[in-house]
Length: 189
Image (tube, rainbow, N blue to C red; front, side):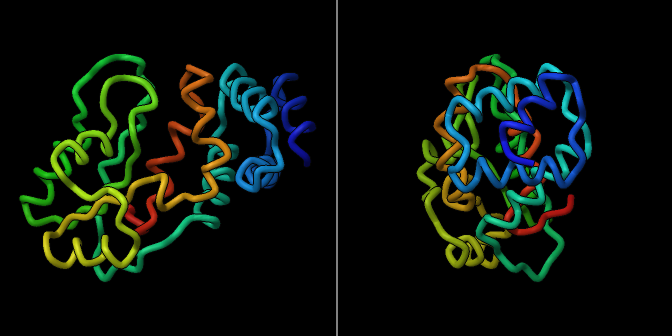
C-alpha cells in the first residue's frame, strides 16, 4: 500500500493492517512521502483513531531503521509520550535518575520538546549531559553509571524526514506512541 492509499483509507475510517501501516511508515522513513502526505496521514490516523496494528506496524519499521545498542542486562526505559500541550514538569527524566539510583539499569530514550516546555533532551542538555553520544558512548554510560541517554534524533536518523514536521502539525500523533515502543537498547520495561 502506498502512502496515498494509506491516507485515503484513514480518511475513509478504514483501519490499516500491520503490513499496510508498515508500508506507509517506510514511505515516511525513506523520505518518499512529501511533507503534505506525512501531515495528512498522521492527522487522518489521529481523527480515525490509531489501532494497535497500525502502531505495531509503524513501530516495527522504526526499529528496523534505527541504530541499536546491545546490552547485557534487562534495561528499563522511562520514555514519555509527550504531546500534552501543557507546560508540565518533565517527570520521565527525573524518574530515570530515581530508578538508576535504586540500582536498576536505565536506557533512557527521548527527544526535545515537541510541545510543552521540556523534553528529556532539553533537561539533560541543561544539566550538561552530552546528548549526542552514539551507541558506544551510551553503552559506556550504562557500564559506568547504570544509565544512558539515547537521543531520538541521533538514534533514529530516518526521522529526519518526519521530525521537523511534527511541531508544525501541532497535535498529538501516532509518533507520540512510537517513542516508548522503539527503544534502541531494546528496553522491555
